[in-house]
Amino acid sequence: MEIDSKIMEVKKMSTENGVIYRISGPVVTATGIAPRMYEVVRVGNEGLMGEVIELHGEQSVIQVYEETSGIEPGEPVIRTGQTLSVQLGPGLLTQIYDGIQRPLPKLEETMGVFITRGVDADGLDLTKEWEFVPTVKVGDELSAGHVIGTVQETETIEHRVMVPPGKEGVVKTIESGSFNITQTVCKLEDGSEIAMMQEWPVRHPRPFVQKYAPDVPLMTGQRILDFLFPLAKGGTAGIPGPFGSGKTVTQQQLAKWSDAQIVVYIGCGERGNEMTEVLDEFPHLIDPNTNKPLMNRTVMIANTSNMPVAAREASVYTGVTIAEYFRDMGYNVALMADSTSRWAEAMREISSRLEEMPGEEGYPAYLSSRLAEFYERAGRVETLSGEDGSVSVIGAVSPPGGDISEPVSQGTLRIVKVFWGLDAGLARQRHFPAINWLSSYSLYPQALDQWYRDNIASDFPEVRTEISTLLQIESELQEIVQLVGSDALPIDQQLTLEVARMIREFFLQQNAFHDVDTYSDLKLQYDMAKAILNFQEEGKKAIAGGAQLEDVVNVPARTDLMRGRFEEGYDGRIEGLVAEMSKQIAASMEEN
Image 1 (cartoon, one colour):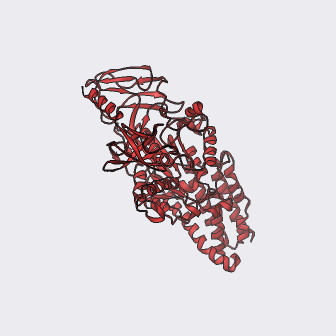
Image 2: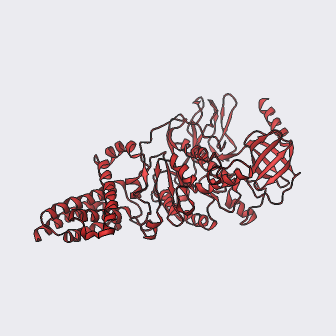
């Protein structure tokens, strides 16, 4: 009876019509309805999808997720009784969605390259059947988040079907075989039915038991990131950088090489040609761990700059909700948001239409709290089923003119614990990744140091500190060099400059398009750093023994060591190359 009364209530609401009172771009004011906050409504004769964002007495303010040109005051506004939610279940992976989870390839099949207004489409294929394998039996006690069965969603990822939050009980029946995602696969003794699909409101974080300390690193295979500025699993990072400095390539490298099992990529308000490039390239990227397409473990949300701004505002919530769903299965998820600046611009436009008091540079006063809400949904957690899962959030920021003093960059930096600052000057010098080692930072090393000591080397933190110190010293010496030239420096400081150059060219530079150099294992990174410090130590000894700096720097084994990183099997040969380099440096002392 209770279910029937709820159905009747929704039907009653769906016939409760209001009318459009005022239109201001994507913001529509309606009268004659009494909705709840964040309720989804249908606007105008075409039934455009919108969401209630403000209530003022008789008036409801709605942000519309589609182009509003052509609609007029007096047209109907219809309540749905639903909040903006996403469909979660088998079929998410490999999909490309817009900001409100409409599958773009499916829309293109029916209407071509431009989306018709008022079109609704399910985020998942409701008719496709999946082979469901139960993992519980009749009589088992289930709680929210408990895995009741599995589906092989792609060649590489097993989809774990869970009890939705809010449901619990004893299994009355459990099925196995082929089902679509709306069919019941499990019944509980209290009459509750569980299907493979669940829906979740995007603005509400999914529940978990507890958050863990960020003490396990997210491996990316990028030396400057893993070694100097590491990100923890469940951590947050910001990548601010001007146009052309390599934000998108860096995020693609992270998607391809990080040890996250699931990738959620949100193209939020980027230029159409840049988003097209990503959509063209991602399906062709091969997952190095499985040699299968990377899309097998990827969900993409594409919302280009010419799409309605309200949908752009919703796209980050859609993406992070999907990421949390896979986290709840016990997976480590990497979420890339490119770029949060465009998201903030959408908020600014909507805020101005609402005639709200503008904050700095016209952004709404709640910009920082919205950024914090988004990044706070990251974390490594104990899921409701007792598994460990994580969502690591990496947000690109596109400050106008590369000026990171603007509000979005500053708001992001107050929240995230890793700052990978891209530098246009380094990009112009063809130094990639163009991450500035002097302005970037990570607040995770202290929490991660014990993991490094246990899993890589007992002196790993000390080696990292020494490498960072050498780069700082080089920066100070360069100021003197620009005034008087390097020849005027004492020989020990000239050696320091050579060591720092070796760090930059041999260690920090990494070719994303080279088959071997594109990825470096953390143990190899440690060995490379130790090789640089070994060169410094042996060089000091040789110079103290009368060797010429030029002879020390130009030993053939040092060149072999630096070039060897582009060759297969380098990790097995590096020890021998370092030993040969030490021998040749010692010989240069004897020659003098």
